[in-house]
Structure formats: C-alpha cells, structure tokens
Amino acid sequence: MDPIADLILSFTKFPGVGNKSARRMVFYLLKRDSAELQDLGRRIATLKDELCVCSRCGNVSSGDPCPICSDALRDRETLCVVEDIDDLVSFEQAGIYNGLYHVLDNRVSPFDDEDLSPESVEFLLRHIRDLRAEEVIIATNPRMEGDLTYYALLDILRGLDGPEEKSGGKLRVTRLAFGLPVGGSIEFADRMTLHTALESRTTALRD
Image (cartoon, helix red, strand yellow):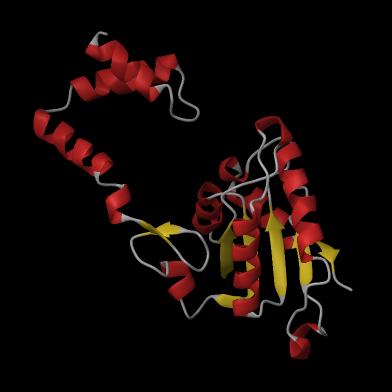
C-alpha cells in the first residue's frame, strides 16, 4: 500500500477523525523535517513506557499515586466516579471540582457486550472504603450506556456505609444534573455546562 494512504488509514482509526481530517494531518506531517517526525515517533512509541495507572483511582500519570490523589489540598470526602480518563480531564480543565476521582474504565453497554467487571467494582468499593468518603458523585454520560452504568452503580452502592460521625452512617450518592445534553459526552461539555451539572447534582441514595 502507498505509505501516504497507509498513514491516512491509520489516522482514521482515531476517535472522531474522518478521512478528510486524516489527510490534512498526513500532509501536515510531510511538511515537517525528519528530526521533528522522529521525535514525534519516539514520543508515541514510549508513551506507555513513561506512564502508569494510579493504584488508588485508575487515572493515568507519570507517577503512582497520581498528582490528584497525592494533593493534600483536595477534598477527600467527595469522590467523583467517571467512565474514563477523558471525563476526568474535562472536569480538571474546567477547574470546577476539588474532590477526588475514580475512573471506571468500563461501562454497561448491552449492544457492545460490556458490563462492569467484578475487578472494577471491587476497585471502586475499596477506594470508597479507604477514603471513608461521605459523598459519591456518579458522573456518567447522559446517554443510554451512561444511564445503565448509573443504575448498576446505584445497586452496588445501595446500603453502603459512610463515616458515622459525618453522614449519619449512610453514604450519600448523587448524580450530575441534566444540564448536560442528552446523548452527549462530558468530554465535549463546556465549563459552564459542567459547572451547572455539578452544582445542581441530585441525590440518588441517602437513607
């Protein structure tokens, strides 16, 4: 196969990249000098070697624990559960949340034959117990898979104990309000939309 066509095909495998965008990227790269291309290739080739998964929250960073979990100034009573790292980055870039996160890295999607694995459930429960969290915010995306994941998490967290001296013994579980567009993704939401959804979150569980 022609090297240009081969690279264009490779770029179209990226999320949200169509054939036209892939062609633009390839022809942009053709205008760069060899040293710049070699440096880019090295960064891509060693990306996974230089990163690790945080053993506390599932975030990806250059250290374990990640900078968010290591930050003593973060609110350690509130845990925001997101579907993937893209959503975590969106919250951090918006600068509207100062608690900790938990990355599920999977979801409930019958059409894709996906479900929450026992390992991911245990990872989440251990994180909640270790933090002695007072509130868990379920920040799944406002579409069918996000709703199914939300209800699955609700069943898992139902009746889970929180810190007696702070919450009266039961964990408070909340969900982002529907300021987010139905069928959309957290990663594409603007700062104001995310802020409204977070501030107007609704209580899902609290006995």
